[in-house]
Image (cartoon, rainbow, N blue to C red; front, top):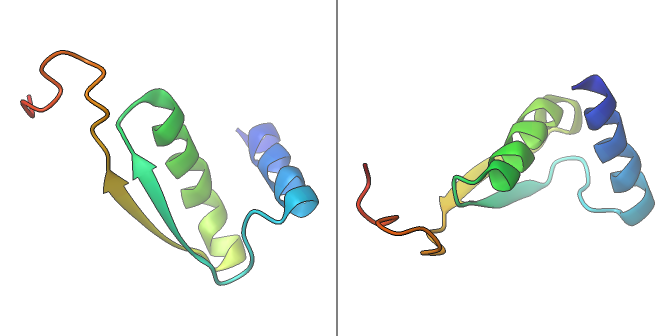
Length: 69
């Protein structure tokens, strides 16, 4: 996990994806990629004083995705 967090920080330094004190809204579909992104940002939030929020996005790629079960 630490190695992945270091890579995210390195990529952020290179491309300026977020700054200290930013508010970030993550489009969270529930798939592994968006959950992993939110998880990584959650662990980096205290270090960078980030405020995180999640907005659920149903891409309707899976049958019955809107059923909620």
